[in-house]
Amino acid sequence: MKKLILAAAAVALLLTGATAQTTVTTGASRATVQIEPEARTRIRSYVTEHKIRPVTVKERIAVGATVPSDVELVPVPSDWGPSLTKYRYVYSNNRVLLVDPGSRAVVEEID
Image (cartoon, rainbow, N blue to C red; front, side, top):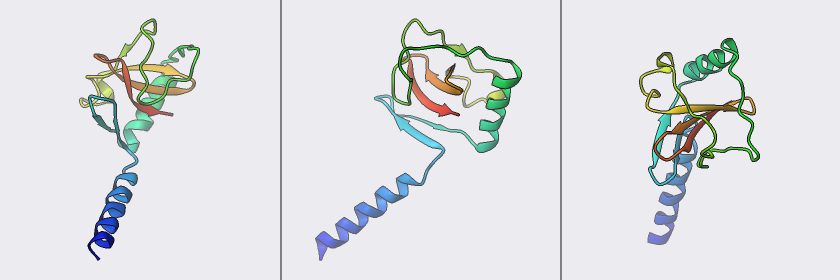
């Protein structure tokens, strides 16, 4: 009976974590980034309106990956929100990738 209760609790815990779609936890630093849908729209609009030139890389960059050292990280504009200004970004393959500048790890993808 105890094993059944523990198994049910474990499943419930896993399912609860899977529903948080705007929060991403990655890498050794365990960075958590929350971006509301309105902010995602604002970021996409910024990239379109300012005609940001995409970066071309050999391999697709994904959340948790390290951005190559030859790729320039761009400061996040203040109008994206104060919680994001500590990051840098890269625009590649029609996606904005938020990057931790210390580790160069991608912490969030906005497509």
